[in-house]
Image 1 (cartoon, rainbow, N blue to C red):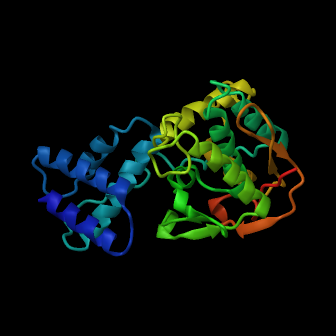
Image 2 (cartoon, one colour):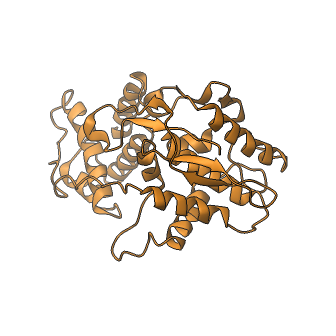
Image 3 (cartoon, rainbow, N blue to C red):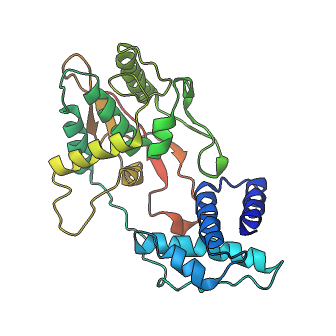
Length: 292
C-alpha cells in the first residue's frame, strides 16, 4: 500500500531530525488520493492531477516537488514508481524581494500602533512593543508570539527550539531590558491566563491571524498598502531592519507607555544566523533598544 510507504518515508525523515510537518500532510493527502484510484505506486499523471488541486502556482509546484522527492526514494526500492518532471508546473518562481523599511516607515508604524483603539487599553502598548521588538532584534514573528515569560532573562531573550531545532540567546542592552520590563508591568495589570509574553486584551494567547490583520491595518494607515498589484510588506520583513540603526524609546501616552522610534542606537547584539548567503538580504547584526 502506498500509505505504508509514505509512513516509512515520514518516519525516516523524523528519525534524522526533520520536523516534516507540511510534507507529512501533503504525503498523506497524496497517498489517500492515489489509493482512491486503486494505485499502490507513484504514477506521474496521478501526481500531476493531485498537485493541480493547489490554489496557486507556487503551491502546485511545492506539492509536485514534495511527491517527486518521495518518488525518488521509493524508486530505489521499486523501479515501477514513476518520477514526475520537476518543471511540470513551470520553473522555480522568483524569490520574494523583502521590503526594507526606512527608519521613518518604522517610526510611523509604531506611532500608528500606539493609536490603536481602545486608546487607553492594553492593546496599543502590546502591539507597539511587539512590532518594535521585531524591528530591533530580528526575531521571527513566530518566535515573538511563542516567547514565554520565563524566557525573558537578565541576559536577554531565550529563543527556544525554533528553526532547525536550535535555541539561541538574543542579548539586549540594559535599556532594552528596562523597556521589556515596562511592558511586562503593563501586562501584569490585566492578569493574563496565558504564559506567553504577548497576549490579547483578554489575557489569552495571541493568534498570528489576529496580529497579521492588525499589521495590515497599520500598513494601510501609514500608506504602505497603496500600490496596486502588490501585496505590501510582510511582518517578516521587519526583521531585515534589525541592523538599520533603529532603537526604541518608551514615550508617555496615557496610562501605559507605548514605544516611539529613535535613531541613536550603537549597541550591537547577536549576529543574524543564516545557512547560506542566498537565504536573506538582511544586514549582519542587530541593534538594541535605548531609553531617552
